[in-house]
Length: 302
Image (tube, rainbow, N blue to C red):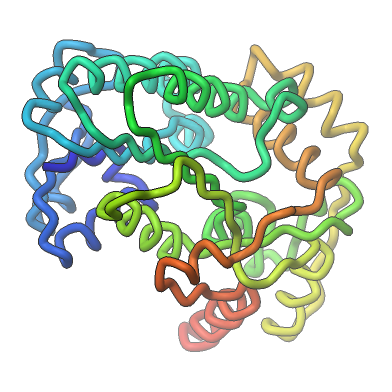
């Protein structure tokens, strides 16, 4: 039996679809106030509970061998939610889940973190700090941890929410915009997570990206070519990212995290590639293919 946490999110939903397709016995932990009907339509039993409510985790983990968690708060916070935070979900929530998993005798704990995190980015980005603390906690526990560290999601970092807006023909360039990122497809990450959940002897950490590394400036050029129009470019200097992430660290940790992670990404090129995906049978999608699909979809709607 597998327990999926974060199944109502973008990545978690993609993992749930694959678990059902493979016939993996699973259930999904969903907060009492969150709509779990999409999971139920897939055929995934929903158990109500919350990462901040320890007794609910004990009930959800009964009979569970494997935990897969993609749960995080940043998307909901940036969308305006006030009932969650990085501290409560990504910090204490993950600690509660790990503690409950130990008590329940869980054998494998698949934890979705992020590529390239370390002490430097943790100082600037509360989300990275919480992820790194969770990684350390899992390694020190009795759990067989499998830390999944993907690079930036194409569906998030090549989208209006992060400053690439084809409809408004506008693009935000963070820092100098000349450092590449190996943008990775959510579906490819979901395939990898599902494979690791079933692998007879998975690695303890997998760090990877997509098959194509593009700088932010190259991303904008690819959008301009695909959409056949020029974008207005708004530059946010590294100094502004550093000052903003420090100033907002406690007041607006989600926004501080975005600024801190972009600052780190603009300073440090990836040292990882798509080989871990290919090794598990995943044919990874390039970022340029995703951009071309967005442009084709936009043209079809006109």
